[in-house]
Image (cartoon, rainbow, N blue to C red):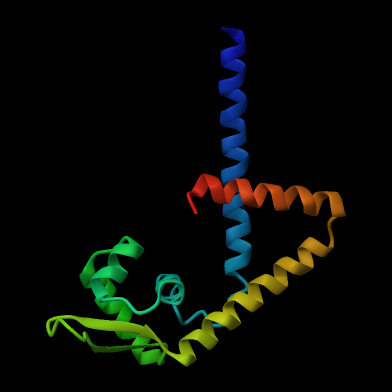
Length: 147
């Protein structure tokens, strides 16, 4: 019984430490943004369009886990920035297709470059063994996240 309590306490402690570390790292990475006038929700939608290709607004909303009316506002803002375009669906006249523009892709690449440059600098400060350990941890975290 004591061992079970110890394991539960140890797992909770690890969960707490990991959660806090991920939150702090995420906060630091977000601080490296090149253009804060674009919301994180909008950046996420751009990333999804980049990863998945052209989508209907409903598909994009589903992948982002938001309601379609919210996604409609996000798409409108992305169009205003010139980062996305809406065009008629080729087979369903009631639908539209949302697609990343070249300007949207360029913005996304700039965001990624800025964040990764900051992270590369921090990683260069670590010992090789620590970087190897982080590489293994990244694989495990990806598996945990279901990616």
